[in-house]
Image 1: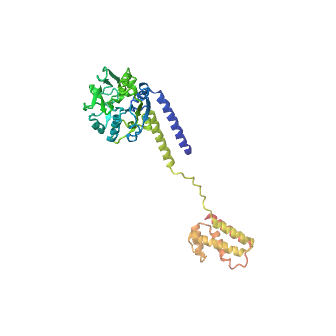
Image 2: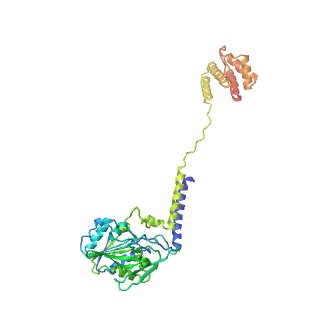
Image 3: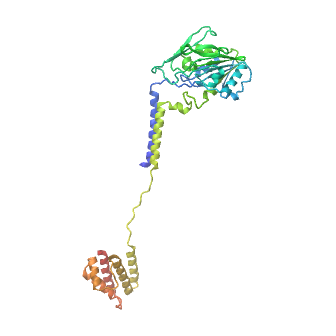
Length: 408
């Protein structure tokens, strides 16, 4: 029964995992509020729509994806009329990476960055100050937190300042300080504070935007918000020949990041309640299996038979040998020697002299009849003096000894 226990536990675990999987499908749909901004994610806060719409906004441009660090960019010193788009929750570029970006802009290209969290090196090189991010961890409808956000475009450069908004999480910041000599306000966000600036460098422009959720699937598909996307990215030249969607800064990680955590496949699965329950159940069953197998396994101890008195069997065998040779006197000596040895070991009596005192002591310790003991002792004392011992005398002596052994 025990050897089938591990297989039973595995079967139960598989059935429970299947059951949890089906039950998860039948449960009420839960709004996925993870902020990924990945171009392949169709969740509310992914950027699948924004990436797909690039081909409609720039029909003549070649659209590529970059995953290399700025040090390995092969398009920085190439031709003009290129556009680099970076939409990430956190933009943590260092000084070297910012210089590469600025060199790219100076060559006559455009860079569009949208991020709510910005590193100190970036702020320092842009001569701007950006406060801490707003409401990264707050959920829609939580106490004391707004369940919507809105953005607007500035006039100029836009012809009119329409406001675009949608319900959901707020993840944004604003420029509390900036250098008006090198930058211009192109849009506003929280409390009508600037969240969208243009920075001029050489022959190109760097557009910095601080409300990245305005480019999420949820925002763009809400109402007429796609108009905000079209008007914002239309700032880049219409004759742009190559559009580069950057993913390097999306996956770049820093030890001091305080954003929403890992983008790994396992972390995404761990957000599902059914998967977590199945994983914990599997771990518990595995622990029970290990504990069960740790028990010491031992074969059944065979029954040990009671030791046999091989000495008596040996004597009987020797006796039959002597009897067959008809050496009755010698056989009588052997039988008498065994009897005396048995008496010494069993009853602790001296057998040097077989007298009346010996008979009384043996009778007292064994409780055997006086006649039987006297007959045995008398026969032993007369062995040496007898010339011959008949078969009947030997048989009578053997019978007496057998009865003595049996009763003692």
